Length: 209
View 1 (cartoon, rainbow, N blue to C red):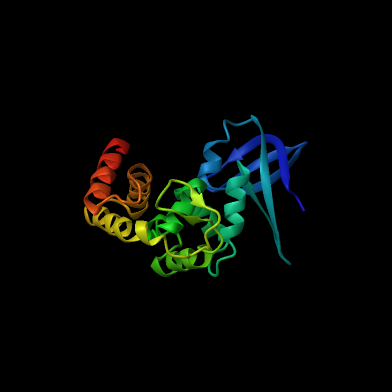
View 2 (view 1 turned 120 degrees about the vertical axis):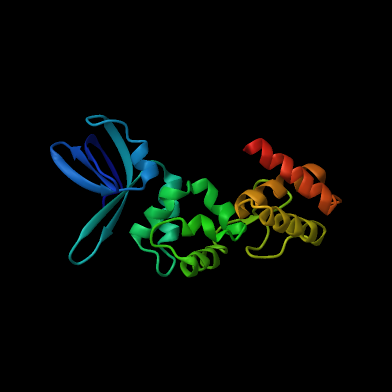
């Protein structure tokens, strides 16, 4: 199994590249994120590789870092998500945003990718929610001790979820609203009112823009 390739860039396409390793050209499929980090023709690069072996084909998939490779493998565990769809998802959303999208149940993050409709986006979120750390609205990082998929603490959940819904109704993306309310909950504490969470969230979103 090929796990890594180091060589010169011989070709860069829309969805793949050729890496020249000591005179042998390896065709490697990759996300647009990885392809955008390659550099120019003839440059020396090293890529992490996932090898897919079938009876009639051996396919290589390249990644610029371990996080992207790990997410590729996770996405491919979902029924209906093959390698091409997984790369399409990683092309429209960087790996660090995927846990937040899953926690926020933001189907639009996934449905932006070619080959992902609403049903498949829902399935991705449903099947992967137990495989990522539970995202706590009281902070910006995942809470490792909480059982995946469990509800948020009562003192945080009600107002926070209502604040997320309010921001979404104002036209903000669900993941952005989720992140803004998460920051607000962490800054204002568990006793924050719904109005305070929405106000802080709006301020956070306006600064981000």
